[in-house]
Length: 87
Image (tube, rainbow, N blue to C red; front, side):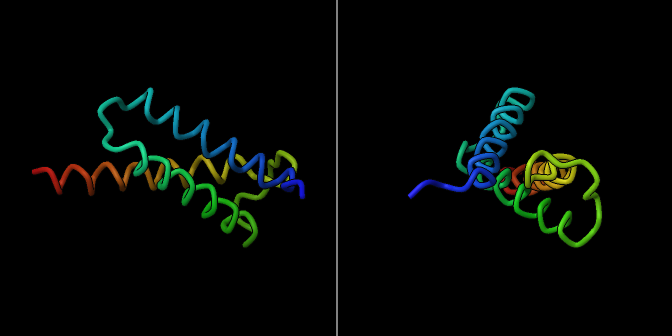
């Protein structure tokens, strides 16, 4: 059974965005936390695009603009939460 191309693109986008966050914000905390926030961001971006908001640009079945925006918001919120828990 072959995975769908959309799922493969989504996984690749999650991994790329996770690595970008790790490079741009070193010392960000556990890798798994960053990966989970990126995965939630891509899923949230797709839900946002499916609802009719920010669904203009698409790459196959993905909407990278919405995905990147939601990932950025979730990673920012994660940084705030992680910063508060260490203080």
